[in-house]
Image: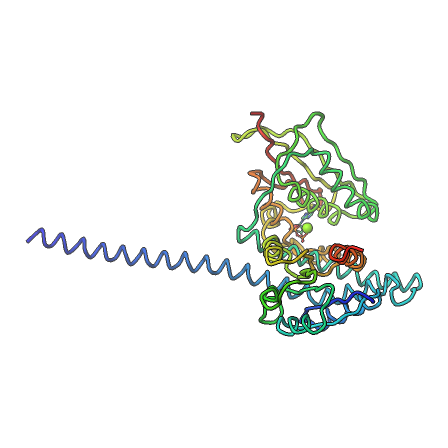
Length: 122
Length: 270
Ligand SMILES: Nc1ncnc2c1ncn2[C@@H]1O[C@H](COP(=O)(O)OP(=O)(O)O)[C@@H](O)[C@H]1O
Ligand SMILES: [Mg+2]
């Protein structure tokens, strides 16, 4: 079964680009544009990996952690905010890693393998 | 009777002074608020610009990497142009953000010891292809037994990269660009290393020597046309150098090339 990735992102253009990249490289993709929808999606169709944007309209992406119960899949923040405080905030909230957009397509591919590998050792 | 009069007077003065104090603290608060708002604004803008750029660059990379099928050489060249342009915009957005953080004094140094040679090599490697493309001759000289620097390596690389980038850009093809590192004259704070980044390029008229360090300042918007800048490079570079207690200045005449100098203190042998 292909790994399932949930994209939490409110910009449709970014969702479109990442969905295409991820699907074409052998992943199953679903998406949500706010934290409530994301939490629902995580309950009904649990993903292996969540790529989480931080600024979701009025929502703070990190609020997702308060809405879902453990065990959580690997959550990685994918953000346009390139500063050390944001990084700290994400790691403190429970993100496995933080990447600044746009992440290079090659890097994303190799990183996904690493992130998934960490959680589900073969 | 006289006494009562004096008391009245001082009460009145006190009240006036108190009022002035209030007014001053209100002004200070307002200025602080304005600076914070400006930083917030620039930081929001840079985030918002990054988002659609993400879509552009990611789609470009999907095509370039042949994920949707192999491209011909010319097609790949064209798509690489889209990605390159997007990445250049990203760099400029990054510069705006760095500036905003600097203006809000949100920048801190993380210091370590490193050699001048190491940072020069790093910066030259980064600029190799640009130098080659313009056919410049780049020379690097380091005075023997120069002491190691003690500072924020990333920021010093940023400063050097910026000065070198300008030297390359503001010099007609086939010009000379050089970097020299030497011991500078000791200051009251101790020993310093002096780094010069020079070029044989278009130069800067003396009346513009201070202007170029101002944020968003470009001497000639038309001359800068082929040069992609925000006019923030030198403002940020000066900020970074000053955070190290160093100085950054320029010596140049119009048409006579430019020499930018900066000093970085070395750790006192104690
Ligand atoms: N080596 C140089 N030779 C001539 N002019 C320069 C040089 N470096 C900087 N300048 C002038 O100073 C301006 C500001 O430089 P900078 O702050 O780096 O911003 P930018 O490179 O983004 O324009 C440039 O636009 C240019 O007019
Ligand atoms: Mg510049």
